[in-house]
Length: 288
Image (cartoon, rainbow, N blue to C red; front, top):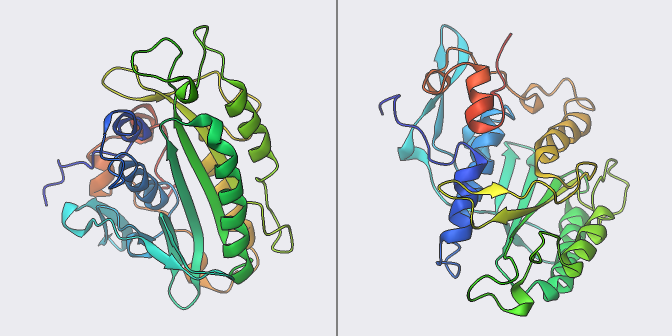
C-alpha cells in the first residue's frame, strides 16, 4: 500500500460534510464516516492498537527500528460494529476499543439527527437507557455519547417547522437548547460507583449544511464554556480511560496507551505535529 494514500476521514470536517449531504440514512451512509473518523483517531491520537478498535481503521502497526509505528492500509479497514453485552440486552455499539483478555474498555455511541428536533425527548430516554444497560454489565467501561445534528435554518427551502434547528438570526431553537441542558446532567461520570445512567463524556454538535466543500461545527453552540463542545470530547475520553485503567492497574502493560514513532509512514504522509494540528485538528501521540 503506497504511503501517499491517506484515509478520507482523518479530520472531522469531511465526515461532517457527508453527514449533511448523504441521503442514504437508512443504511447509515450519512453517519458511518464519523464512525471511521473516531476509530482512526482512537489509534493515532489515543494510542490504542488498530486491531483493538472496531470498526477496524485503515491503519496497521509495524516495527520501525524497534519502535511502534503506524502505516495507512485501506485493505484492513471494515465497518464491523462490536456487540457489547448489557445488563438487560446486548447492543451493537458504533465504535469500541476491546483489550484481549479484558474486554471492552472504551465505547462510543454515535447518533445523527437530520430533523424532527421536537422529538429529541425520545433521544434523551434512549441515551439514559443505553448508558444504564451497558454500565450494568461493565461499570468500568468508558462509555461516551457523540450526537451531531444538522443545523437547518428557518427559511431554507424544504425545511419544515419541526426540522428547524436555528432561527433566521442564527439562534438555536428551544428544543435543542433544552436537549443540551439535559445532556449536561448525563456527562462526566468519573468513578465506577457513580450513576450508571451517565456517560463518561458527551458531545453535542450542530453541523452547518451550507459550509461549502467541508462541513464544520457551528461555533456558537454549544457555548464556549460548555463541556459538550466537540473539541473537549477526546481529551475527556482519554483522561478518564487513563484514570480508570492504567492508573489502577499499572502492572498490566497492555492497558497503557502506545506512543508511536514520529517517523511512522502514516505520519510522514501528512507532516509534522503542527501540520497534523492544522489539517486534522489534533496531533498524533508520538514518542518525544
